[in-house]
Each structure stands twice: as structure tokens, then as C-alpha cells.
Image (tube, rainbow, N blue to C red; front, side):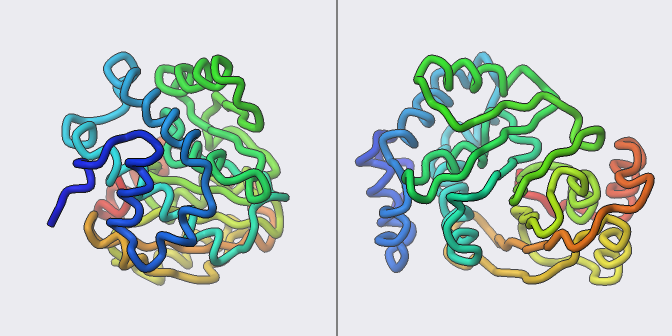
Length: 258
């Protein structure tokens, strides 16, 4: 099979890679995004990768597949389920340099939400903030905060490579407003339903739907879950980060997308 990294990383090349990887859905995907802006972001990631430490060596060699196409396809799948995101406030937790979050900003104007990129580390996100200022890109807020200590009124939260699910839902329980949605980007669905129920119960989130993403099989197994914020989290939620990290390591193996 041809490697999509053989395509150039300009707008034309990215579009060709979309057609190659997603032949049955490419028309809908291509109509949703501003590919010139996406290409500018990819160029920034490549230029600042060494300074920012954005990617591993493998990921640097597979940036189109593992970051651009994967992010874009997840957003396409979310848009297909929820409808237009235009009136929403979307937050990406543990965003690093803006992955996958910045690709929400790459949606065409009539589909584009207000966007918040959340990370506790400045090293990567500060470079992205400078990129936004230099390019005059509006509608994106860079938030430097520990997720378990903050709160907001997001309509939609996403995460990828964050603390493992379902503990990620606890961490984000005060960032998503009542009636809002949290969608973690996940690998193979091997979750213990009883564990999910136990962790989610005090967070105010309710698991509504799981959607498999077979079009991303070239990367491995991928799926997304849709969690609805139905009530406020209980007092003391989220718990301390060190407790959540320890518990997630004991109770569950690797279930996030790195």
C-alpha cells in the first residue's frame, strides 16, 4: 500500500492524501475544511518540531497519517454525529502544540466553533500561540492551566493522548457545561463497563454512544465515545491528579492514542 507520506504537505498534497485514505468519505471531508490554513499549521509544526519537541521520530515521519488525517477524520466523525459546531465553544485538553484541537479552527467559517487549547505545559503551546499571533488567526484561546484545577463552560471537550479514559472524564468534569459533550479519542474498545460506570457516576457525565472508526484502520483500532454532561459533578470531583494517575495505571492498561 502506498504511504500517504509520499504526498506533499501543502494544501493540494493534504487533499490528495484525504482522497487516498478515505475514498468513500473524501468529498464530505474536503468540503468541511480550509486546507490552506491546515497546510500552514502543518508547516509550523514541522518548522518548530525540534524546538518544541512536538513529535517522536516515528511521528515526524508519519505526520500526515498520525496527526493531520487522524485529527481531521475524528472531527469529521464528531460533526457527522452532532451537526454543525458553529455555535459551540470547543476545548481540547492536553493539546500540546494544538493537536487535535487546531483542526477545529480549520473548519470552514460557517462550521467553525470558538476554540480553547488547554495545556499545563507552556513549552509546546506557547509556540502555537506565537504562530496564531504571527498569522493573525483569531477565534483561538490558549489556556495554560492544570485541567484538574480549572473549569469553564465548553459545549464540547475532546482529548487525545491525555490521562486515560474514563479518568479523563473526571478531570474534565468542570470544564464542560451542563448539556455539553465530551468526546475522547480512543484506540481499541476494551473497556470494563462496570469501571466506566463507577468512574463516571460522580462526574455528572453519562455515556451515550460509542462509534467505531473503521476508516482509520490503517493506524490501528480507533473509536470515539460521546459523553453527555447531565448534572454537576459531586463535591471533591475531580480528585487530585496524583490519585487519578495512580488509579488509572493500576486499573487499566494503555487505552489512549499516543
